[in-house]
Amino acid sequence: MGGGAKRYQSLLGGHTDTAMFATQELVQFKESGLKPVIMLTEERVPELPDVPTAKELGIDVVVPSQRIWLAPKGAPEDRLELLRDAFRQAMAQEEVAQQLRDFGLNPTFVEPDVVKAQLEEALAETLPLVPAARQAVQ
Image (cartoon, rainbow, N blue to C red):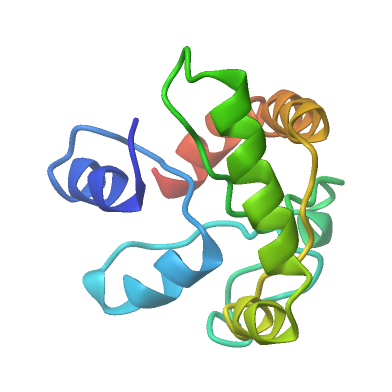
């Protein structure tokens, strides 16, 4: 359904009942009137202290905060490998790593096959939460 800004507008417009946001987005939208229901973090987020974690509610799900870079479908493999190498090198630079840590991110390059497996696992774990989240906000 697009990025956080699109999901945000869809919620405000009444087109969507629930949506997932990155922690940073939730903090940014804090004054909007949207009500965070559950955090999929290991611990409560200091900026949102009243929002329980899934684990606190008896749901053993934690979704790490990630940034995933995407390329157009059909992009040539040599170009993709060039980009992967650039990201690997950037992650190895302390200045870049510190900037990522400052954003609350773990500066680790993860290979594409591992990312795909993580996304599939996260989807399988979180999709069943949608009906429960809808009930919680009604």
